[in-house]
Image 1 (cartoon, rainbow, N blue to C red):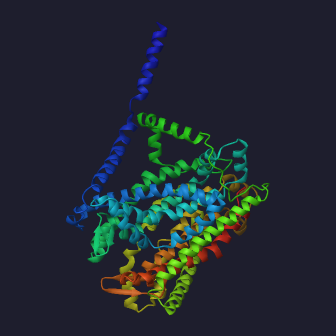
Image 2 (cartoon, helix red, strand yellow; image 1 turned 135 degrees about the vertical axis):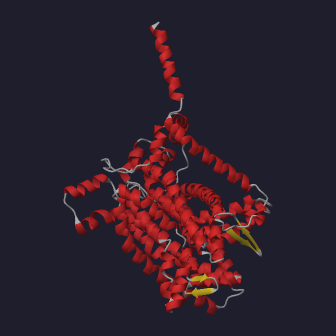
Length: 585
């Protein structure tokens, strides 16, 4: 009888654990809404492309919720694609010496190419891939947003892989972990805090290019996708200030939503990956993460997925050994065969580079004189000076602020939504203010249009510094307190060396983004009033409007050259110094 009673109690307890609790009833509607959003978006993407012509963008605020949902879905899909690209591209660039010879310079060039440049080359491809369907235009828009999100995420992951502490790497090798196991058990967790903060910046920075991605022009044909960006473009075109106010409100709601539903849970979850020996006194929190942990049925449904992922990370897959850029101290010099392979690989890379340069020069020379080339280089130097000065100014401002926020998780939780909103605030909304003020007071456009260049890119520095400060080991902070290190000595010996690699990551992406933003910021208009500053960005914008492709290619090529040389001569040496001298080992 006792055995039967115990068996019955055990069965009842097992059945009870499968029943939902009150937290499940709160979480289930949220999950259902997410599934419904994805299904509706997929259904509308399969509609005939002719429906876009019959569904003109309406400035009625009642349509904004639908537009906001469609824009948010595009940005989330672009974020997923950016994350996959980051894991693959960043790993190859960081761990393969030969791949890095090609991938790192290509990365410098790609982040300097304007988003509009990508659209002009990819729209035709996606429309031909899905003929007669909205999904072709949707893919083109998602790809455009992807190009605005992916670069800082990739470089953050690349920087983290290069900065993995040597003692942890040696421990992983001591446990005979394969490359696959070490990647998922050490390198990805170590990079997670910085990667998540850069994902926030990418999501917010994507708003800057939403207008261009949702209003696509192919020849004489314009395809407008329903979304917040298209709504904003229509409002600016009609000079409707009340509609712009509704856009700002909709953006605020969306930013608060993905802060609470995605990024804050990720920040709280990633806190366990902090590299320290003592626990943080004030860990970040998330009500959504706490809700999921308190659920009964949903939690049990997620357990199998977590178990599968954990088992997949532990599978001893022996991937081909990449010739890592970061070599152990006791490794001997490369063998002669390796040197010969490097020389052959370098020759192939140089040959391909020479071929590409020859093709570009051949195309550009058909419509450009040498005098024009010299003029474009002068404009490039003007934009270079503008970018350098602005990056220096915003660095002085945002580095101390970022450290203040990163060392205080409670403050970071309060500031995070505001920072995301400011980072997402499109510079297009400030064009009327700048145009009216410059024209009214006869100001110098070369000076007063410059703030628009870093309006969106300055946040790369802030978010990366916050990530570096939040990842700073708590035991290091306690040691500095015990030794009474304070004031400027604390900044010089403790904090600045700790966040310097993160700052360099933010400065590189902010610099590349500033060059990209110059195309929009150096030539602005409000209605029929236009204000133009001298610079390479204005040159590219004007030649694009004129459809002069040789000059467009010349402008983009010169901008790519300036960005690559600037990175090679300034940022890369600083990054190498941070990697070799300022590691938290």
